[in-house]
Image (cartoon, rainbow, N blue to C red; front, side):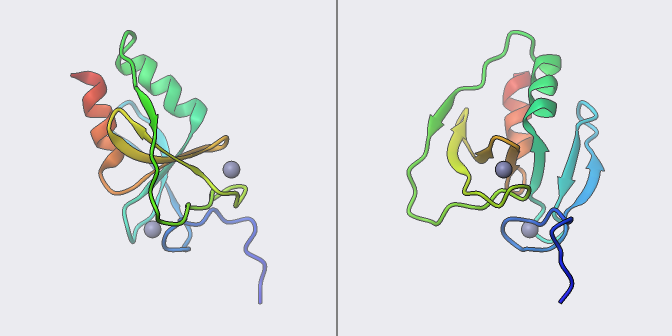
Length: 112
Ligand SMILES: [Zn+2]
Ligand SMILES: [Zn+2]
C-alpha cells in the first residue's frame, strides 16, 4: 500500500482535496469535490476577513456536540469545534474546516 502522507485529505470523505481559488477575496482553499467542504489556512483566512471587513468581528464560541471531532487534514490531530458567528466550523492551529456552504455564510456575515 502506498504511503499517502503527502496528501491533504478531506476529514469527512478521506479523499484528496483539490486546490481552488475562491472568487470572493481570491482566497486559496482546498476543496473536497465530494462533500464540497473547504480547508483554508488560518493566516489566509484572517487576511481575507481583514480585507473584506476591516472593522468586522467574528465571534467565536465553543460548540459542544456529541459527534466525534474531525481530524486536521495536515497534522491529523483532533480539531476544535466552534462557532464562528453562528456558523459551525472546525479549527486546528493549521487551519479551518468549513462544511458545504459554511465558508460563504461566514463571508456573507462579515460583509453585512
Ligand atoms: Zn469531503
Ligand atoms: Zn493540524
